[in-house]
Each structure stands twice: as structure tokens, then as C-alpha cells.
Image 1 (cartoon, rainbow, N blue to C red):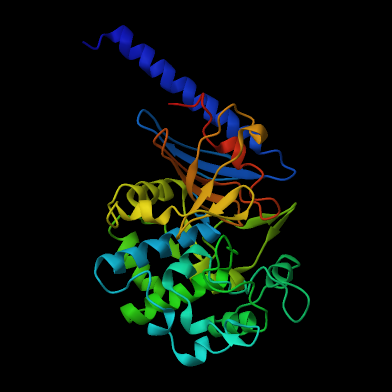
Image 2: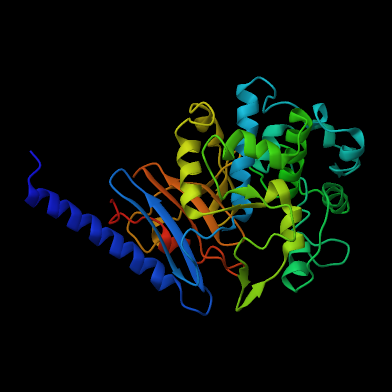
Length: 359
């Protein structure tokens, strides 16, 4: 029987948990590296959303590469409807001009041998048009961060990739390399299969069914709705670039709506839940992240963790400081951003659930 005393104790515990989480995100905002944060957390016993610093309540922001989780979702929905197989070669969906010399290494053309699964898992060996240095000896990322806002097309991204040397043969054992080009290609495959632009497909397949009102693919450089990101102490005003990313990093959302999506992703509301096990084939990409098939795992060895036992997190993070992770061992959904491009992963350790934060 629930007495008033038991009810008050329960409310008191919930209030303490909320205050503790607010203290964590307040501590993150140091006004030197992080100027604002927005976080939403859902556990079996607690739902809490908060902000700190210069963030307004429920303010939309760029989620960057967390976009890749949404693209993964569309591919899996297409798979469910028998429109695609993860083991299909991408040559089944992409034209010869796109693929020619995309993966050409040691005198052999591998482009037509790459599978959809290898794009999702970053095991294709295709260079990264965004973070790798091109012919100018400067990466596109470096150009943008230095203030050179610019737009590009899918064709531009592919041309830039073709000017770089592939890293390894597709599907080479224990090899993975994070490449935004993989998701540019996946976005194109989706458009070819659905005969609609990616913005429309995402809206029909994910945003509308989940009732996400503030989540959309950013495509208009005149749209000033999303919060500007920081690079070190300066705000980045790069609407042309952000409207060019598309499938590899162009979605705008809020912490509240990302938690809704995250729960749907891991609970079988968007595609058969049994697919999730198949996605968990891990390869190292960069510490402390490992790449699965369309998802990432954030796992820190206990010796480097501020906690005795740091839980495994599955989901994705982005260069903007955005993240969306599920903690299976504690049934926690965690999404948000620190809105800092310089060191986006710095604060994830402190925003992640510790053994003490069981809700």
C-alpha cells in the first residue's frame, strides 16, 4: 500500500536525482570550453530534461553525426520491407559514374564489390571526404573551422573522396575507418530506392511517425533556427556547410526528441528488434569508440574511468558535441549536446551514467 510517507520519500529521492544531474551539467559549463549544454535522460524510474549555460529550454541544435543513426534506421526499415539486403553490393543501386575509381587501390578496382553492410560499419576502406586531407593538404573540416563556410553537393563529396587513396580492401579483417563518405553513399542509395529526397524520406519514415516536431534535415542555409555551435571560444556561423552534410550529419533536433527517437530505435518501434544483435559487430575506430554496423559503442576500460565500473553505451555521437546513447545494463536513454566542436568528447564521461546513477 502506498502511504503518504512512502510517496514523499519517493518524491524526495527523485528530486535529489534531478538536482544531482543538474549539478553535473552545470559543472560541465565552464565558459572556457563549454558554454552551454542540453541533456535529456530517461530511466525506468526517472525522466528528466535540463539545460545549462546559454541553452534555452527545448532549443534545437545540430546533432551532426548522430544523424547516422537515423540513416541506419531507414536502411533497416527498407530491409524489413524486402527492398534491400545489407549484403547487397552497392553497385546494385549506384551508377557506374559514381563508383568508378571510388575505391581503386594497388591497381585493382574494388568499388563494385563494396556492400551496404560495409558502408554502415565503416569497413569499406573508402576515404573520408570531410576529415581527411585532400589535394590542398587541408581537410574540409579544417577549412570550415578556419571560417571558410562553403557548400558542396553529393557529387563534390564523391569527387573529393576519389582524389584520396583508399585505406584498405573492403571488408578486410579487423579493419575499420570512420568515413563520412560511406553515409553520403547510403543517403544516395535511400533516395534511389525511395525515389524521393532524403529530407522527405526521413520525415515520412521517422519524424512524423514518432511525432518529432522540431527534428528535421537542415537544407536551407537561410534557416537560423538551430543554435550555433562553438569552436573553442568562438561561435561557428557555417549554414552553407551544415546544409550540405545531409546523410552524414545534417539533422537538427532537441534533447527531448532525441530520447524519443533513441527509445524507439532500441525498442523495436522502427524496425524489428532482433536486427540489433546483428549490428553489434565491433571494430576499433578511435578511442573510446568502436564501430558496429550503423551504430557505435562507447566503452572505457575501468582503469581510465572515473568510476569503478563504467557501463557500456550504444548509439552515436557527433562532432558538434551531440550524443545519443542507450545503456543496456541500466536501461538508460541519454541524449544531448555540449555544443563544442573543439573537443566534443571531453564531457561525455561526465554526462554518462555512473554505477551510482541508477535512478
